[in-house]
Image (cartoon, rainbow, N blue to C red; front, side):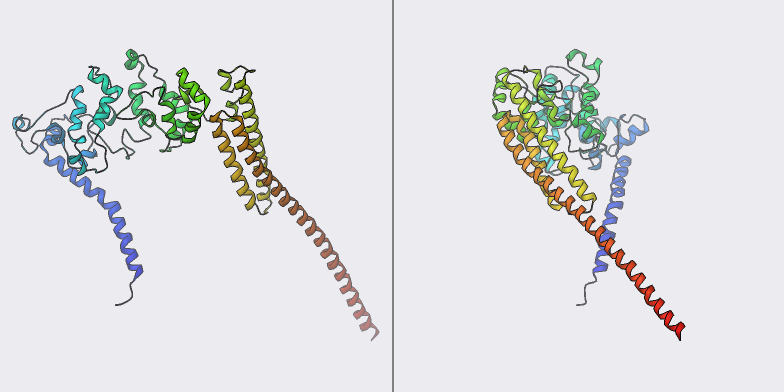
Length: 431
């Protein structure tokens, strides 16, 4: 056998990839276009100009060849309206508000059916919905609550991973706000309608909406989606703890956590808020005006004393770390070796982060132990940086001295050469 031509294989792979990337969507759209022409439900509604307002041919059901009859029943192959929309053909028409969850659940709760389309998709959404506040109220006859189509739309449903989807991570807050931000619509429920405005200003909202970080939490990450409920007193810390694991564990194991539970206070929310969670800072701890501890503690009680000590420890480490960081930047600017300093700074930064997390133990001793660990690393970084800076100036002085000596030698050599040249000229003149 001849040698394998790797270049040809590589080119074939690239061409195949480009073919799949750019050509496949046209095939898919071609199938949809064919479906729209051969499906009498669609062609008739187009002719009568009665397509649903939100109809979109990119709907995920259309992409999977599940057209109108897939949900509404009937016979799309018949051009006789009475026959196509007959009971015998299984036509069910437009479901009522109360029927919608079960209507969607006919397929989405059938694991056998769904497995052929999306094997990993959950099939308990309908059950979850009926346990949610929306579902419970719908059962009681409240037709203003959200149903499947309120969030997913009816005829333009996209996968949650599609940026065009109403339930794509970046779009979820606006989707929820369509109802929850409408003062008139929500008036009878007597709940706030400024959640979106507050969320958009929060550390989570800025990360999600401004920085486009889809890993940041949206409404459904805290409240749930199909089983949406307002977090209760006992579940608040667990909701936050799904991301902030150590904070939750420290708080739950602390005396403060036990006291909060006894007094029926909302764990994380009491200090951090809910929709308008702001970026944390060391100023939140202590008894100053910006400190949240002072909301409950008097300046002279034991809690204030602990908070003041924790604040003192954290600011000491933070200040020392910043000093070490500034010196590392100077070492870097001077072109000296800052590798060891960087490693020490990473360890000091880690200790600072851990010390701030340990605030949730409300134990100044535990915080102090971690702070001392970080101070040790930061102090070593400062000493190493100072040594590098001193070495830099020592080298400069040495370079300056060497330059001066070399300059003197060059000048002396210059005059010596002139002296020799002059002697040679004098000898020539004597001849």
